[in-house]
Length: 290
Image (cartoon, rainbow, N blue to C red; front, side):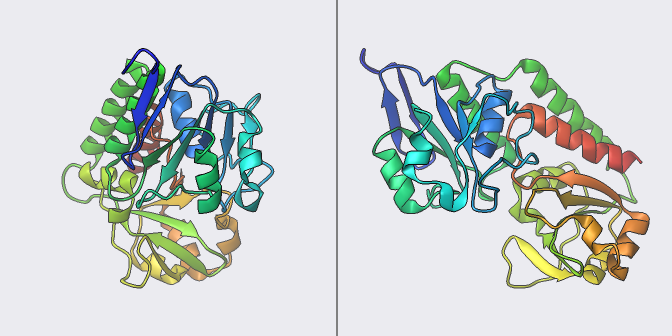
């Protein structure tokens, strides 16, 4: 780092960003912004994806991020370069699900954005562990001069130990992650494709595999197929674009699940901090214990 470069960071595309001073006004994809907040960085602004409301961020994705005083640049078709630059960011933090493509932004928009401000992309896809994703956000935060409190890592470790203890021995509870898709359909998550679900599997949680089919991340089925997997705990997608579970109230398959399973809210775009990881694991542990 030369005397004219006060900050630099190489992102998951292998692209180096460097500036003459540490970034002060960070614009981030909502998942990244919530993660950076847990590391002590308050983003100046956030933006959503094509799944999100252009007028307001999805509260399921914001974690502990306080939304007062943090500008929302929009989502989907409302996101052009002018909207993204309106708050005067000196760094944009985005995510990717592989291939280096910026999630939530049109490729041309991302290209024009990067011509005017440094863009750091963190890969949050299924090719990386949740710990690996968290480590990359921690490295980015450290480069800006912040870090998550040590107590957060201790809380995460304690939560992992609790889940591991609850899954020891025979008769393990069956945990099914899903995203409701309507009164008679649901998307069942394929556990190996989701970093946070692989964490649960590594801790001994029994995650039944949904039926084979064309979907890479999800198997779209009727509620009867979900019931056939006999879940004791359901991790239900609570993002704004997922169908509320109440919509399936009249379906016999969902009724069979609801009669026996404990429902835990689940955000498939998790905040990638130790604090948020601990909170998720504790919610699963509570359901397993119950």
